[in-house]
Image 1 (cartoon, rainbow, N blue to C red):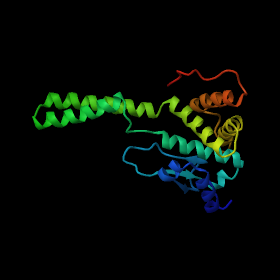
Image 2 (tube, one colour):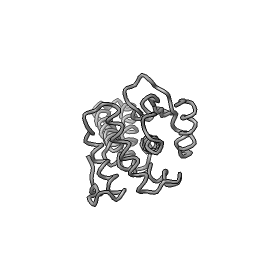
Image 3 (cartoon, rainbow, N blue to C red):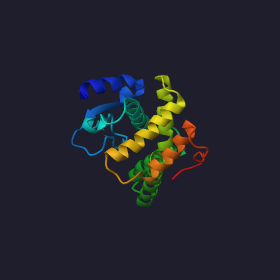
Image 4 (cartoon, helix red, strand yellow):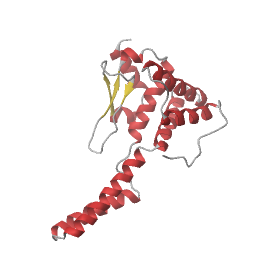
Length: 201
């Protein structure tokens, strides 16, 4: 597999939002097939690292769904969207500035504490199990626009999760991957037991 040709193919596969936000980087020294670090608010670019020596061991549909899933996860992380925690974080920051200007140490501590709590909540929401399931489902929706049926896309992503664990010589799937696999089996029609809608970590 020629990495540059595969990168071009994967870029064509991505939705437009993915092409704007993410960048595919060849990283032959990494032990993971595909990897991406959790994007922080100040990261303007969200790189996706691929070890193409390992990547070529997957089938094309597995590679497609794995890439779409990673892009969906990266673009799904939202630090700045209007909700109660964003409001509390902004109010806390403004309060800290006002209190510091008035030299009120207690006010600064309280406002800073509010901001920290709100930012932790935003962090946890973006790292939740539900966010992982949402990324899978978003990838399946994009795959449907690329010619896959919903069931096919879910099956390919499910088999990719299992194949990656074997390629990386892991003893098994982690807890999140097991939850994702169960959800994908339900979407593919391979299981009648879905993940509960209110499931979260």
